[in-house]
Every structure is written in C-alpha cells, then in structure tokens.
Amino acid sequence: LGSMVSRPEDSGKALSPLMILIMGGFFGVTALGAAGDNLLLKIGSYIPFISTFFMPFRTINGYAGGAEAWISLAITVIFAVVATGFI
Image 1 (cartoon, rainbow, N blue to C red):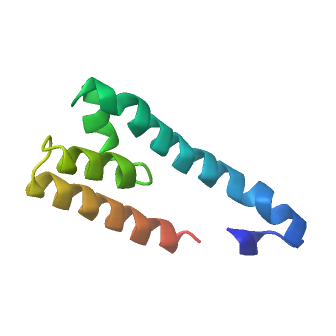
Image 2 (cartoon, one colour):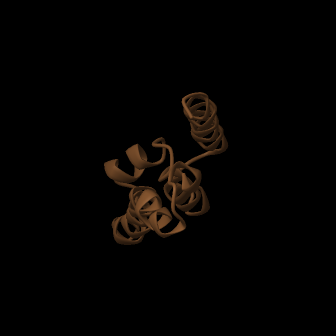
C-alpha cells in the first residue's frame, strides 16, 4: 500500500484504513473474549484480516477444532491470492 503514494509523507494516510481494520479485530476479540464463544466470534473467525485474531482465540480456548481453523486459513489464503491479483 505504501507504493501507491507519490510522497513518503502520504504513506500513513494510505495505510490507515488497513491499520484501523486490524486494530478493530484486536480490540474486538479482546472485548468479545470474555463472553465465551458467541456468534460474533464465530463470524469473525472466517473474515480475512480479523480472523488472525479471532480463530487463534477460539482454538486456544477449545471453542473451535482443527477443521474450522484450516477452513479459516484457506479462506484467508484465497482472499490474499485474489486481492493480490487486483493490485
């Protein structure tokens, strides 16, 4: 994303939407983690970018099994490959 700007000063502006999304995932799993395995944690476990926070939390606490973790990883990899094709 930083290569999409012409001046180095603008790289922060280009990266801020992605950083907000990642920080939202971190704070989301922190806030929702105390409630146990609820629907928002399950849905967030399959959304790329935030699944990197949600699925490990669910797996470590025993809410998700290995198959769910592999499905989440596959969705993230497929999303990354498709998104790379558009850049």
